[in-house]
Length: 617
Image 1 (cartoon, rainbow, N blue to C red):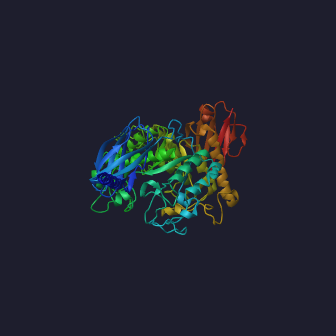
Image 2: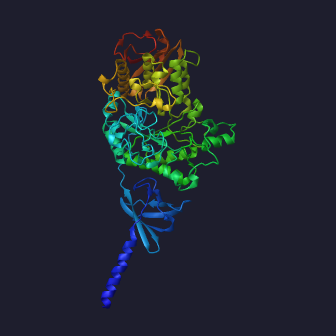
Image 3: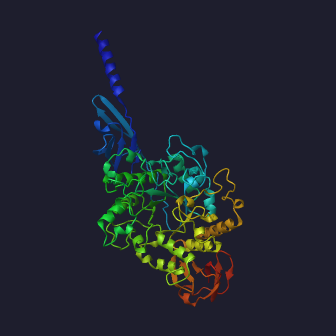
């Protein structure tokens, strides 16, 4: 009888132990998993669970060390600082949570790296980027048009501010279209969950850094999209935001650390004056308001000076790069976050992915303060920026000037000349992303007065200029409109929805003028794609005269002559002043018309025309 009682007691004790040794109910784990073999062996894992700080914590795994446990202001959060040793293997290690007789555990997974960083494509001036807003491009999956429980639940294409149903599958469905156009890279505005109650479609008020918005797809579909793009010979650029988040983000609604956000007694908006970072006479109050003020009432401003938040953001970037194999990153609102953090972020990312393409949005007002944010500019930036390139707003302004203003000492085509003459400010201006319009700027075709000749001029300059050219979706089919609101610039691409009256993805769905524009852009883009001289070839420009601006792109194999005539009448130019570069060339082929110029002594250029010539010996 004693033996039987003892056996029963042992079974009872074991049953009780097993009942209290179970998987812990964790609400959040960021990052959700990680990889072995990273150059940086440190990992900070953020856990959220009810009263998680009440537990004693132990980590068990071969070559896995718990270096430090950080308790937050909020009793439901902890951060585990983990060291992943050089001999750690892919698999799961256990994290134990103990409180009295309660023993809980969580299995955290480490994966083998699949990204070959030495073979990574990156992004550079050989690329031609196509920028699109997924919600406004094409609806490939109608099932996810409305998701139960999400705040912005109105699905209405008749509203500028509502969700329209475009998604990742819609982009995947049109990879052949991008190839036909000559694009080599896709830049999608942020795809992260944006569970905001109003105008959430654009993605710039993120509510979950580790989750694709379910109205666009899911994480696996995004990874599939990147792979399918790569299979089609197209790179992918991620759009990331470090300055702010949406106020429905879980880290704002239930803050892990109060210090992760800039807060005020009353709502304080940024003054949007980036020059406060470089003004030698700056008011400290103005500078603080610029760097800590919010973009809008629904966009809490992040405090990147907090080292835990900084690591959270850096790890999130690495997670997506490793998970999906992305080729480049566009950094939204680059001048607004803490600039030391942006420098540290860039170093950390390029340390793991040295070939990754990077460019930051610098929507600023001057040549020097645009270059101020780039690497080795020599402009006394104490934050030691590491950014290779920027969105070249100064060249954008110059091209608009050239096509909308009369020729003058600094206006018209002279504006382009002077802008490029300041490229000495950059270590390498070829890393700059150049553009004619984007999701924040009036449509290019409208800016030039719906003049097809000026449209072609802009396209020709864009695709023969130094830098990384970017085409905003629909520019190739003459989509038009002025802001504001910005939503007027973000209308649906016709044909992306099943019941659209016309399908602009197809030649027979476009008007004659739309096909003229599309064909012009595609021909020059594909020529650029197949000729390195327009990718990384050197540039030589000559002072504009009488409304005519001439520049050359050249390398050891080819020389391209570009003649920009902004006048309303044809112009004949003497070429003797270009002898230093055209010496030895006898003829030229017009890239756009395929005609051959048998002599180069004089060249006549039509009114409002950009002539692109491949010189022939």
